[in-house]
Length: 251
Image 1 (cartoon, rainbow, N blue to C red):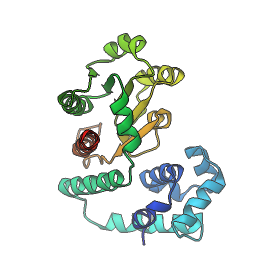
Image 2 (cartoon, helix red, strand yellow):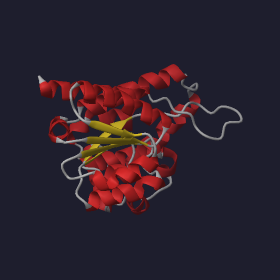
Image 3 (spheres, helix red, strand yellow):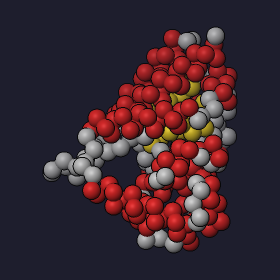
Image 4 (cartoon, rainbow, N blue to C red):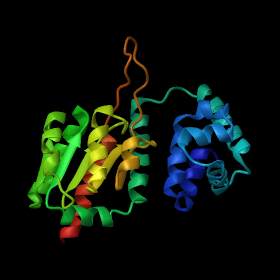
């Protein structure tokens, strides 16, 4: 079995830390092949033994065997035709669906139900659109929601947010520098925080009390385009699932 197949097969045995390490490995396969355990442990901020334990949970004999399988999977991939954008869509949706099925929403949904106000902020245009859908659904269910259209509004309302509220932040990378100070202050004041990000180890997810992840693979490179283009259809699946889980709480 390749590493992705093993990750799915043994997902129930993996801890949150295991999944974060695994996400880094899957997103940096080529680099991992030339790394030692110590170098990887520094990259993901865990001990060497944590990485070795992960390889054992995936039923590899050790780190070296896992690297061998990674190298073989990359060789196979170079021989395969480039995936179509529809193939990528299916892959992202299926991976996101698996993540959602493995997530226990009960504590998060209860925190949303108990919150006096749910404050929302998205770092990009697509994230703001998704939050608009969430806000409309929550208001339909008589939950007070305030979605910030811009960073300035987020900053202005920071003093008004209390421990009785809940903050939801959507981001692709979870590494947007301009909101790190906001995140830091929310944590200092013990205000409940929810992160919704792409599946990878990131600052926002590490600081948040609740994490939801989606899979978003960049489209194949297009000539003269330096920045990658992402579809956020899998993010919409996360938002839709969260809305449905909250609705079930009201029944």
